Image 1 (cartoon, rainbow, N blue to C red):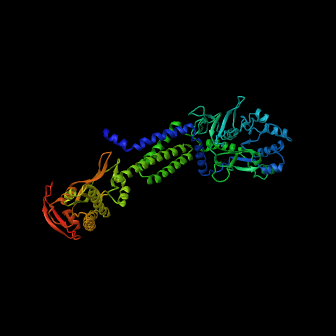
Image 2 (cartoon, helix red, strand yellow):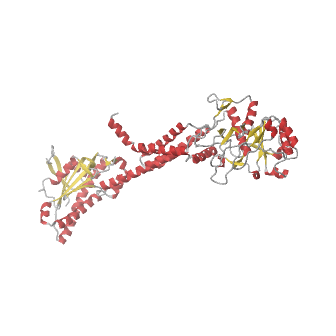
Image 3 (cartoon, rainbow, N blue to C red):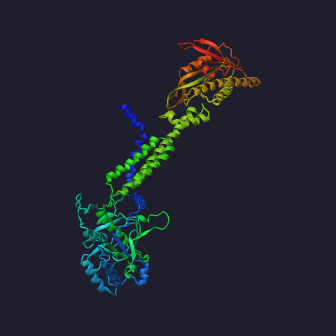
Length: 637
């Protein structure tokens, strides 16, 4: 490609080169500074809530301790005897695993001995400890006997900056140096072990755990939209099955009363945990996001159930785990959408089109991110949306400024020459008429009209300058007004002459339009004669001089465009028809035309024949022409 074409291509797309890179740099900087992190969390929440409901995982169930259970038992914590009875009833059904999401670091008599016996005789029962203290409270130890049997899991969950749970811990290191699995993981292991699935190091990264075909990628502080998050322990992003109530839940009273179906818990993972509002074991999750109404919170036991279900379904059912892109991919993704916004807006060029198309692109971006989320990918949504919007706004601002300049150009070129209606039509079609701040040159079929005052030089010699200028301005104003009235363009004033063009600047190429322009020009000339007669009466009454005028009209091809320099530019018409009209106006000044002599060329006569009284004057050689021209005189009087 020649260098000139490269330069032109760069200039033609200057809005894109000027906008997209700058916007991308700013948005990427905001992304990695963490400014957009809350927006990305909200986007994830919305994706979770928009996702179709998943079928209930029958492998996991919950025995919930409700407010009614506490009222019925008359105490909290529930006694060891009641808890032992609940565990014993579950054991009868031979569940795959029992998760005790209750703190039991101290005895709650009566029945402590019985509870300890059940702990010792139930190898698939997992208790909990709070391994890491926080601002709310200190660490809480597990039951001693379960600790000794290594049947303990952590129920610690990391909270994001907005207080919501979006991650889970698989392993953590306790302050005393022990490595501790989470309750959800230990329960899932027990279930999977019975299915012949055991944990192993992932082939793609030996630091990652693999169960079946599922590889649990370890969450890092800056994964996805996160910036400098607490990535202590071995964390994963939680792929919730749904909001609160997504698992089968029965009350403790239902279990103790024996009203549950036989073998209700067989081969299932059953968690026992509090649901009562008074116990305040609630957390906000992506499903707490709600524009209307109170946020919906999820109990801690349901969060552990979600983790257990996530691990089992990923290992056995190939249910997707939530993954994120590397930073380089995210940067490319954000930059690409900044470019899309700039390219689309620049290509569309008109603000009206942009406000329709770019929102559709934003919808497409959102739909694409949602589809990828259904496949298990959480990719940036807020940064590319911001980049798309910012690029569009920047381009719109540039276009708006350009339109202001173009409008000023149009007004400078045409404001004094055309009617407001034609000026608006020119503005409406500016994209076809203007290029790089100039009126594009075009060949068009038009009719040119020249007028001149007869014996103006003698009149000028006899009048004082001020009087002459006032008189001439009055004359010009009336003649120019008639041109505009008949849809013409006043091209220029030359001394006492007026040049007008009909059929520009918006090209009219049909035969009917060309004929209409010719008729309009001749009609204008006839009306000029009438107006001059009216002025004669006025000037005569005022004692001012009276003059006659000559008009030349020619129809044919002309070239229209803007001419001049950056400091001074004007609209003009050039071409053979302009020369012919000027020569007709000045031809044989002895031909009598009364108050207004109107000479036209043959091309004009063809269009006005039969519509105006006219006579053929002959075929003559006009100055500067190589061939004779047939001329006609329109009889205005």
